[in-house]
Image (cartoon, rainbow, N blue to C red; front, side, top):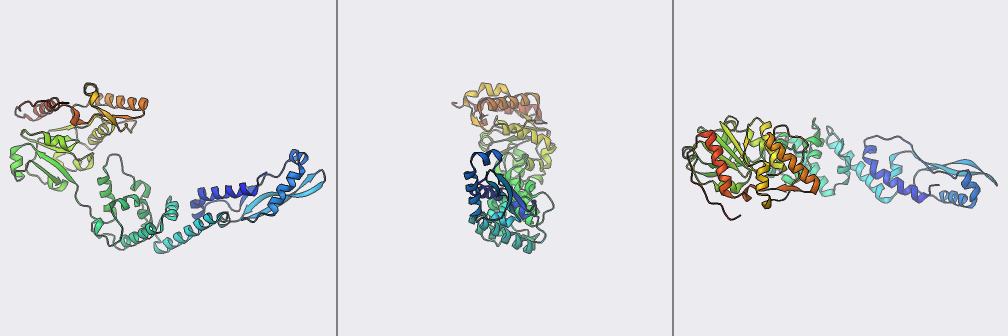
Length: 413
């Protein structure tokens, strides 16, 4: 036998779980909740308790209509509660003041948004719309209205005449903005950054779809060739946009991609025909957009030994850049394992573009993570510089006829 308090709690749970579907017109109505009237053994064993249960339902003041049916007792036939019938979602919402207020707010917000944005699509966003705080909701409506009215503004994000809008806000509300604009693509997918992109490149795509302009992402460059350096105003270290780098006339034969910024500054000798990118994180897309990176005689990659580093290598090759790695194998990890720390675990089951030694390393990292619950990170800066630099020189010399360079002393590890 289900008691009124039990059924009321169930209605609150059902509302919380299903009200976004009901707001879209889904669900089967009326809803019928079986009250589980007493069976024969219960009626025979304790008829007093059965009548007390029925009396509790006689006093029920909650939503819905109690339907009754006749049941036979030893004392005769009596009407017993059989099921609670709720004709529509608003009846379920009336189970408590909180659910009633939530349903009212949901309806008011959807009505106002449908009126303001007839092209809007509400798949998978109703709960977020209904439950976001009032300030964020007003900010969302103002943002969508402005973007709808100015679809190709070309403004930077911070130039939008909307209070409280910034990069983080737009990224976290992208699915809502795109849905209310009636974006034909999947808004959830559009708001999710592909693993081959950085947050910056995903943000660039989002802003382009919204008609906004994104400040150029700057790539850290170390020009190791004196002739190329002369053509770049004599600068050895600087940051430049992909567009500016793509316009270079003097193009390097060898490109070194270094994951961390400090490593790029550590190379102080000149290497003819060579340019290094450093400290730009996992910007696969930006590197792939520079034509002379794709056509260089050699692209050398050296980064941290961890899951994300190897995933980056695979993605880099997937974008058509045949990078060759150095110091990216189990032997290197074993040699300097004492310098490693806990890191990010490998995130993918398969990487299509790894060489056998790299794949063996990735599998080793994945096995360690599975066994220990944490990944391994051997940062490239932790490898003694003398050892690392010899590998860099060998890689450059083997691919670009680099001049000889002096050996450097290892720092104290």
